[in-house]
Image (cartoon, rainbow, N blue to C red; front, side, top):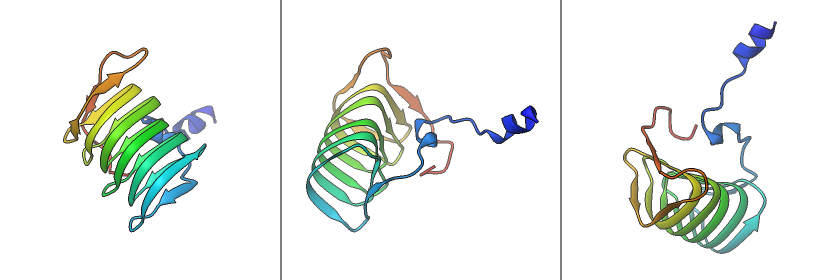
Amino acid sequence: MADRQQNQIRPQRRFTDEREGFASSIGQNVAIEGAIRGTTNLEIWGSFEGEIEIEGLVWLRPGSRFAGGLITTNLVVEGDLRGTVRATEKVDMRATCHVIADVTASKVAASEGSYIEGRITVAEQSDEMVGYAEKREQGR
């Protein structure tokens, strides 16, 4: 029985694998200017200009646009990001991203094909940025 239970448990290879969903979402045809603060996961499909401070995961989906200051625990970028980012844990820049920003995080990963312009500061334990090639479908 223990073997059967082990086979049913799927290993989590990415920090996004453990996420249950998003309590807050900005839709594809929505544009918002202002400030957002909270302790939740947030996904952005549309555009946002301003300041975001989220204790949780922020996911900029393909086609999304963000301009401003972003402070979060974890960040996944698949869209357009301009401004400044500070993540207490990890920033993952996927192949579809276009980043013109200063990024500071404990861990930074960038996929082949991602466009990144700006300063990247990797804080704490790690001393380098990790590159990778996407092997799974987008959005998983």
